[in-house]
Image (cartoon, rainbow, N blue to C red; front, side):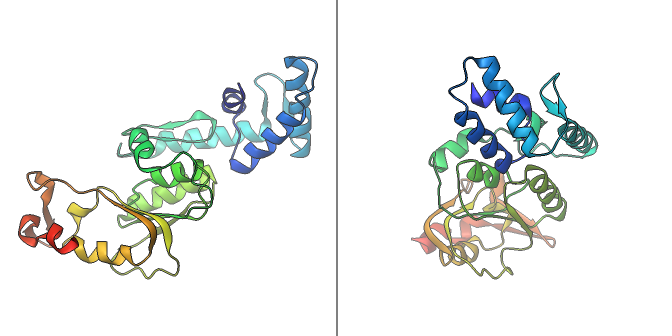
Length: 239
């Protein structure tokens, strides 16, 4: 099917993907599958002014980029937090959050803006884009994670913006339809302050994930202090 063809070809980004699809469907009247593939291949890659590699349906440009991505992934020190699929089906090993994405996102986010606070490597950002979201921004406090997320965003090239910074000090110029605060609350000294701030920039849905009081992560440690969230009455404040 078309999806498998695109994966095998190794479409570089969303723009190339849609260009490919438009040519694919424009040639539906081809006499048979072989002619269809040949027509699409020639028209698509001629438009990109690339040299065709008939074996494997890959251009020299694609082969070079695929090699660079593989080399980056091989050398990078990923922490295994998020599984992310890069162009050419290259995979970053990590926790598969696809079920969570299916739970919190509708299938089509066309026209919706999304903010992911504590985005880590940016899985949910790119998943939102895959579902046709408009503006998508990820915020990450950890410098190492933020730099990795920026690199991955440049590789995927789907328009996701990654910002490094502390949510407490960032000033928002825009509001967002969907705001995510996933697996972050236990890192915050006062989660309610952050949640209240996010409600002011959220147009429609704010999704907050936080551990139960019995969870060890309910103890946060920063600058040598320890704080028990149970004593903060977060739920009472929020309600």
